[in-house]
Image (cartoon, rainbow, N blue to C red):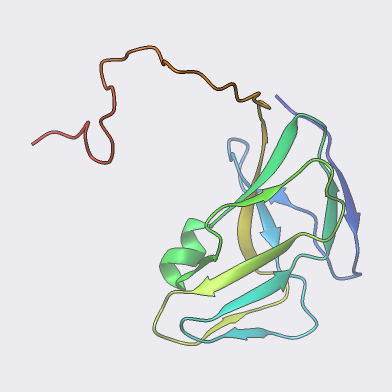
Length: 147
């Protein structure tokens, strides 16, 4: 299933998101920088993409880490998963956190995160005194694991 997403370049050196392969779920987002950005260990730096998106109503853009960037350089979005609402029209920014023990450099045009556009359900939360019983019940963290 494909959907056209309007993308506005806010800066001349911005790159539009691209998919690495025909079956990639996430489109790569690229750093849009005038000069290299240095991120010290334990530091978070907001990285510009230079683009704004027009996400259709009923959809959201979810920004996830790129596995290569996080495993090779220790860089991943500080908020773990960023959410872009359909009515947001500002620049897409990625807060990259350096979880490595070394200074890391992000270069212009480097792939910094991946974007998944997905439909969502808007819920109406209704108070009740009873919930339907399930086999799991109130079992929480680790309750479905095996010994």
